[in-house]
Length: 185
Image (cartoon, rainbow, N blue to C red; front, top):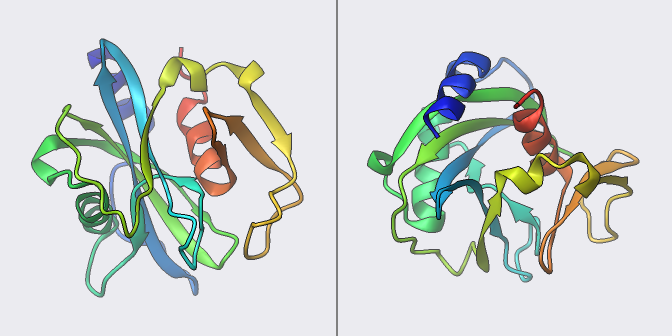
């Protein structure tokens, strides 16, 4: 855990302000949590009845409120979606921002999360997944595929996909995960 955190602090960008763009701003939080002695990423599954991103696997996150920094947005959204207080998180840095298929520039902040009870908001979260980092680091588990038929926005022709138990990680979240694991020993 400590070695990974030190490595990520050295590799990741420091949290900062929004990048200048004509796109709208959003932020997500990539929580790393220890489960039974192994690092896992916390991901959420969106409810099937949502207007935006129904049924998709994602990090907790959403649109920025006026005056919020990317860090404030990510922390607020994580609290709203899964009930994690900012005090349970140690921010390690952020990944380079990426534009979404729906015209939003998304900042992804990476944080170590203490194991705490979760209280998912059923309006935004159908399930919480803890995905072992060692599984995500296995290149044989990743595949480039076309986006599913339910994809919205202007999708690229292919996207990284990672099959989970009953769910698929793909699209922007998968790209952020790949950004995170690149270069990890």
